[in-house]
Length: 509
Image (cartoon, rainbow, N blue to C red; front, side):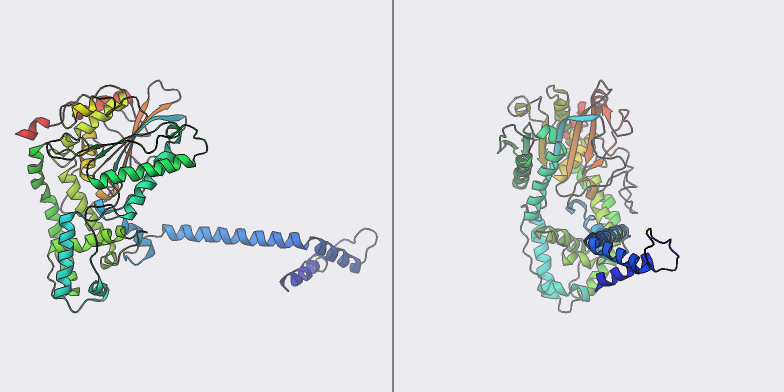
């Protein structure tokens, strides 16, 4: 019926509109003209239909895309139930955030006319269950709430039937998949290297770190198998050098050899304590109103917030936990800042000896970049680093796996966040205000540090560039260019803190 009407309308439009048309050649009558138009439409009706359908589809796709783009760019209005806020919430859990591509002022793409000749990965393990002592604390809190609360507030009613089933210390299936995905991502980014070279891999000795390394290799291997242009024999399963985390064992991926560092950490809580006193009392009061009889402390309110990310990553698909909806977006931003203060003053630039803990790894990195033996007297293992089999030079792909706190030490030793001013404890500043630093931006679950060496047309010397979770970190004190890079020689010179051993002499005072 639609196309019949269309046929009539087209005929009428062509021959019978308000306009006067010139008579067709051969003294054709109006009737003859109508017949000729009708005959043309009959012959081409299929093409007309297809054209109209195509135009309709293009119109629908255009408006759908425009609508989705406008929806995705709409601001979060402050409620976690709002679809625009869920992404904000899920990226505001400090070190318990799952890794994501952090905004970068400099494009993370490989610059034109450049070719990466060396790639070093340093990665945190994937999403895990709480640590053993935290898991026990959470379970105890849930049991106490069940015992003492009979009248749950509106949004808290689900807790009545909530069963605490989280484990301790181990990767979750979601975290395992993060690492597989990371291996694929690394291979695809450095395809020209990865298709013909196997990675040299090290992992700190804790089980979740070793399993993360294994899962990463699975992803790397899968990507290589899927690469039609890779014809070099693969050596999978790749060897993984596991470095023990035992007391007294030199381990640059997770050092524990600086006694004074542990003492300095006790002083790092000051700014965090100031922030807790500013934000938590009113929040704890609100939670207690909804859980009458529970009498939660400020610390226990933080535990309630912790249950959001841990229950989320315990779900195979990473579905947002009901605990996440108990708090507003602003409260989650406060929580994220609380965790950032802990990392900054506990292990990063705000720690007197945190960056010194990362010196050993930086000196190993310099050795790999330059192809020269490791020079270090801090946390490196001279037996391992002195052997070609356990610390080979001349490779083009390296992958190391560690923990968030140790990565913070290494960031500090590298000076990646030297432009960041000390974080205040009495007010919240955003990651952008902190020159790209927050716990969620720097050390989330499965956090990634890429160190690239690249050869670029027209330049005699290679460049070095560093990315943290896809954010280019402009290098400091080495004359970085507009792309955040320094020449290799200038980069090595800039690492004087590490080359001079940091403050290692203060570790045993």
